[in-house]
Length: 398
Image 1 (cartoon, one colour):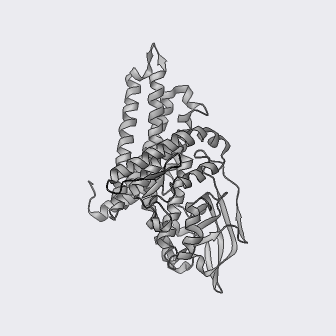
Image 2: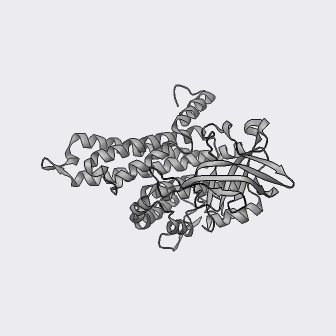
Image 3: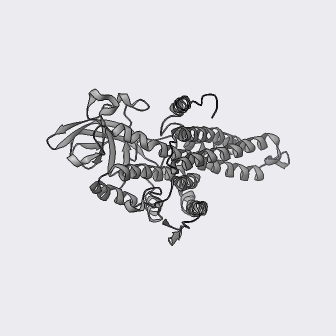
C-alpha cells in the first residue's frame, strides 16, 4: 500500500509488518489533523461551510478509500487502518472525519457492487475529490424502520422514474451524486428495494434547505427531492431487489468508522481536560490535584482505551473475513455513549469556561451527540447486540 505524507511526499508502508503500517498511517494522519484540521475547526463550526480545502487535501494524501482495493483507485489497506484514520481525523474535527467516512461508505458500495462503468464514472472521481457524494436512505417515515420507505423507482421504457423525498442527508447541499434506496416492488417488502446512482443535476432533482445542526456543523445536511426523475437502465447499483441487503452489508464497516470517530472525540476531550486541569488553579492548587477531577479523568481515560480496543477488535474481525455484526454494534454503541458522557465531563472539568462557544470542549460536547444517532441509533444497536447474542447462543455472556 502507498499513500502520502502530510507534507505531500509519498509514504510507503511496510508490507511485512501490518502493525507498523497502521502506526505509520496513524502518525501521518495525526500530523495532518494537528497542522491543518484543528486550526480550522472553530471557524468551520461557526461558519458551517463545507471544508472544501481539507476535502481536496485528504484525497491528495490518500485518505479516501483507505480500505478500497487499489485496483479500484483506493489505498488497498485494511479496516483497522481505516479505523486509525477515522480516529485521528475525529480527534481533529468530527465534521472532517465524517467526510472521510461518507466517502469510504459510498466507495465501498461502488467497489463491491458497481459495474465497470459506474466505477469509472463515480468511484475514481470520488476518491480523487473530483466528485462529492451523498448516501440517501432516510425519509420522514423511514429511519430505523426501513419498512416505511416511500421513495419509488418504477420502470419507464429502458430506464426508471424515481419519485420521493429523502431527509437529513449528509452532503445533500454539496453533493454531485447520491446513492438512493428506492422501492422497485412494493409487494416484496425489503426484498423489493434497489439502489440507484443518481446525478443530482438531472431534471426533477432538487434540494431542500440546508439544516442548521447542533454539532458537526461543517458536515452539511439537507433534503433531496426526486420528481419523476428519469434514470437510465444502468443507474441501478447491484442486482434488482437487493438494495436493502446491500445497504445493510455496508453498515458493519460504517459502524467501525463512527466508533473510531467517537474515540477521536474522546481522545480530544481527554487531552483538553488534562491540559486544563494542570493549569487551572483553585484554593492554591491545580485542580488536577483534586480527587473529584482525578476520578473524572481516570474514567475518561479508561473508557477511551476500552472504546479504542472495541473498535480495533471489530475492525480486525472484518479484516479476517469473519461475521462482525455483534462486535461492530458494540463498538459503535459503547464508543458513542462514552463520547457523550465524557465530553459532558470535559465541560464540567472546565467549569464556566467550558460552557463558552469557541472553547474546544464545548464543540466536542455538541459534536459527540450525533454519534449516538447516525449509522443506526444506539437503541437499535442494543437490539442488534441482543439478537446477535441470542443467535450465537451467547446470551448472558460474551
